[in-house]
Image 1 (tube, each protein chain N blue to C red):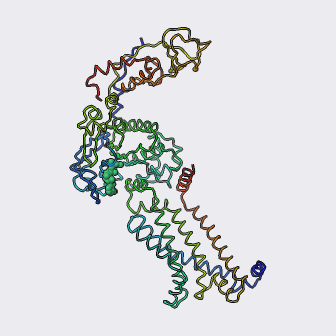
Image 2: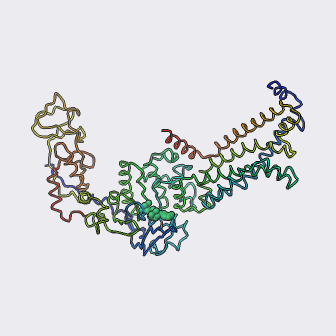
Image 3: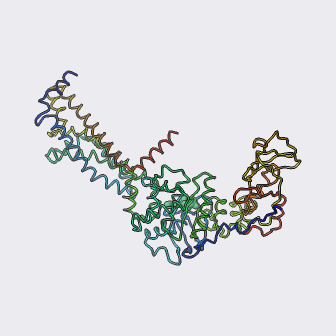
Amino acid sequence: MIGEIIDWFTSSANWQGADGVPTRVLQHLGYVLLALVLASVIAVPIGLYVGHTGRGGVLLVGSGNVIRALPTLGLVTFLFLLFTDSDVAAIIGLVVLAIPPILAGTYAGLQAVDRAVVDAAEGMGMRGGQRLWQIEVPIALPLVLGGVRNAVLQLVATAAVAAYVGLGGLGRYLLDGLAILDYGEVAAGAILTALLAIVLDVVLAAVQRALVPRGVRLAEAGAKKEVSA
Amino acid sequence: MLERRAFAADLDYGRAGPSRGEWAMGIEFRGVTKKYPDGTVAVDDLNLTIEDGTITVFVGPSGCGKTTSLRMINRMVEPTSGTILLDGADVRDSDPALLRRGIGYVIQHAGLFPHRTVLSNVATVPLLSGWEKRKARERAAELLETVGLPAELGKRYPAQLSGGQQQRVGVARALAADSPVLLMDEPFSAVDPVVREGLQDELLRLQSQLGKTIVFVTHDIDEAVRLGDKVAVLRVGGRLAQYGTPADVLRHPVDDFVAGFVGKDRGYRGLSFLSAGDVLVEDVPTVRVGSAPGESTDWRLAVNDEGEPRGWLPPSSTVDGDLSESDLLAGGSLYQQGTPIRGALDAALSSPASLGVVVDADGKAIGVVTARQVLDVIENHPQGVTR
Ligand SMILES: Nc1ncnc2c1ncn2[C@@H]1O[C@H](COP(=O)(O)OP(=O)(O)O)[C@@H](O)[C@H]1O
Ligand SMILES: [Mg+2]
């Protein structure tokens, strides 16, 4: 088995052309990023609205749970039958999958902003928008980005379903490998998917570190120390 | 020879500051009622006039409507009925955000913005009001100094400050509005008692310079009495029980609720308002730490080279060679001349020699008082609890 995997990775044919690793990785990455952007465009504003106003929180948590319960493969197949277009079906399926973690992270981030801080912002004479962008969003950023990271991990793992409806990406290796009982290829597909997930998570962790304000990190560190002390 | 008189004028804590009343604003509650949507009546027909340039304290048990009353002034809460006038104008005629930028607001846990440095926290309102960034930061730096914080702290984040420092920053941020009115909702209740006392002193000192109209909320009657020019005691259900000077409220509670709330010690606490101007300060034999004490059948007060009291040497005690601090009995509390008589009584009662040590503003011992003398002064002031 190990030998088959090594053979697969060392065979130069697997690194070239339309079925080569670079192409498949880029395709996979393309699905993930497209779905992530679309899901963020939908989920972040809703999460901000609900978190800022406090209106509709119950509805939001409930619908998030419903979406999470949907089997992605079933959804994509259904969408494929509906639209008879594999790109649209796969992307919509992935977007639907990525919405709940981003929505939950954004909403939870705003909810977690200290009441006293929100109160002070209002009492200082900030208007709603000023309070949201100057105070709530920067403080909520760690949880918002945490939601994005969760979404990315799920997207990388699940983008493989695109292969079921005839698209590219790393899912191809799994599906094609299974079809010809080439377990080296199947394992290689799984390993590449896992590696992609890890690399993206590391990149996002760096982005998170760069974007989260220093004061917020210090406050978090302080809170942790208090809990453990 | 060492007979000295306390300065009664010092007792006034410098209430009449230089800018008092110049641009301060009065606040008037006219028949103000707040009923929350769930039916809770938090404030019931409140009628109250807050004079400009004074500290007015809303005090009462938890849930009596203090916060609600305060927050109706800057429209964080809208009254169900009634009117609140700020400098004669109905607050409802102002845009809420603009109104708030013109009213300082300090809350219990400071509510500092964790992602902003101390300096930019303090600069919040000037920046909201459209000041240039540089000017706002200069103003903020000045204010840090005003509230007694070193300038280096400006670069830190709130998480890097102690609770007491955070509260000071909260006060500085509220002062940045440069507004004549300051609303403070239990600003010191989350810090430990020693720090709290320091912050209270600081507030009184600030007020003596700034002469603002301060509305201060607390559930602590001691704090209310200490800070307030006027005290409004509220009872649960949001009704005003009594409104008057702290001395009035302590001496003449209008009913059992107020009497119960101000507590059993109110007679003793009332001494906080009595001048110690007539207490005679008597001479006391002293010995110097580090020199040979000789012999005596009297209690002797040990002082250091600066003349500061270090402890007591009991009568007829023998010391080998020079006096060291380990030969001494620990002293009681010190009474600083010019402060209220409560401190003089405590100094006498806590001293092992039954002699309360009186010090001057620099901490030098200038003599002693006995409890008997203090009580004589108190008894000769039947109307003594005044300010
Ligand atoms: N937003 C609110 N909704 C409903 N009831 C409230 C609200 N805020 C305060 N209350 C109630 O109003 C009463 C007065 O509250 P508050 O003004 O906070 O009192 P205090 O500051 O004296 O403790 C309490 O019974 C409290 O539970
Ligand atoms: Mg309160």
